[in-house]
Length: 353
Length: 247
Image (cartoon, rainbow over all chains, first blue to last red; front, side):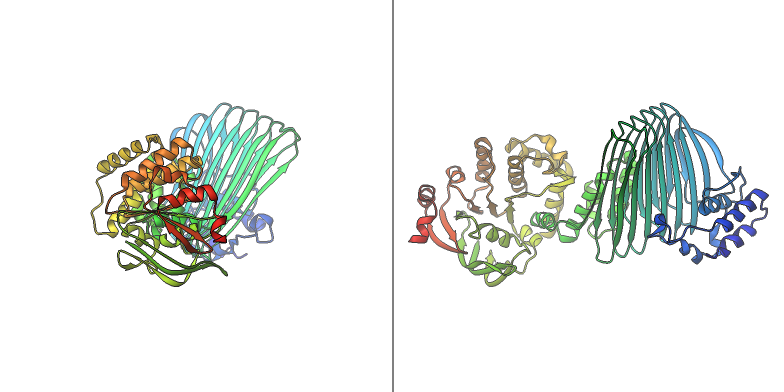
């Protein structure tokens, strides 16, 4: 794949450190993942070639660079973010994921991390590793409502120590192209992860979400509830993978994916995957696909609700199963309103909720 | 109020209604009874505007207007209410939001101003009390996790809030215990007035003990085969529907 625009953008920086140059070299050596790879079956990164060099916008700041990279994307992010920032977090913290960034964050106590991207930058990559100490609590909310020209790649990896707990809500509404990888590792007994996510691309958006939960120790709990809606010509990809490693006995895990197709031209590719290498575990998973229920539509219309509003209300009803987990309530209202206004007949519902 | 003439309808390739005639005047309560598969539910759904059926002949007029060209929401705004045999669950949308959406939409369609939120809440609470329901249900999802009886009670609650002119109740009595049946019947009777009419579609006599009909019709094979007064319902309860075919 040609990466001329990336190279040009980085060379144009006033000062390119040796470490950043090494990251760029690693990118050119490793290349970007292609459609022949299982994890990239439905998402083609060659779309990045369409970006102009001035839209790449590398972060000029320089931080610490790693010695080596997991893959080409990892090197790409380091080269564009200017290395990685280390930071302990506590209480409420916000990060703008609409710019290139790379962070290693540690949580010892109780933290609420909000990752927001309502930006109009054309391109941003944001890679975050989070380490929760024993007994720590993290509430992580990631919201994507960027411009319709935005291209985004995020990678979030969370390690959860003994008796620590992470609660994650991800909401993906607007962008042109987005790929998110979210990995949670339950590393010690008593670690818990609750994940809720909604992906709802509209227009010509392509939105890919890969979620992975690794049960690496006994007595850990994970719950994953994801819902997808595709409007217009949009394409959504969701892959949810639960991995129960040897010795992770008494694992308690559930992954549910429900999808709603709202247009004939919309597309959703969703797959739950379960790999179990321990024998005393409780694991459940499933995926469903559907359209709006015609009986429910008729029911609403017999009460006087016009067809467009009835469709909006039922679509809201489907999405609200995830929205209700958004914290704080003001953010929930803001996202719900944004979601409703994209639908004909949705505006009237905003006032009711 | 409601005039049905020579109504023919089918679902897919199956003819269900085959020349049905029925006139319901304001102030009247009509009961339509009949065996399973006779077309009772089809009739009520067609009146409400279901797209599951194709009307191949005949017409339905409501207060002089041609009903068949109107979408369901316009029929509702005109004053028609269908109580569903199997009310739909809508998790994620509370009963209160649902009721407000319905009332606002109907008022808007009729060119009336929206009700103030506080006035509306008081009005709904009054109706909830009347139906002997727990006000906490208003913040729960529409019919979400409701028992069969609770769903039917919720249908009548919606009807009491919307105050339609024509109440079409499709097997509202099925799945109700005796106490719930009485509450549902009281709800229906509360709306009886010289300006309103009721069409009770039912399989059994028991609702009719509590909501006295003026006219009873037997629907069989897609047609009204017999009409009479309240006595006819009792006769049907005793003899079943078999004797009508023989006659």
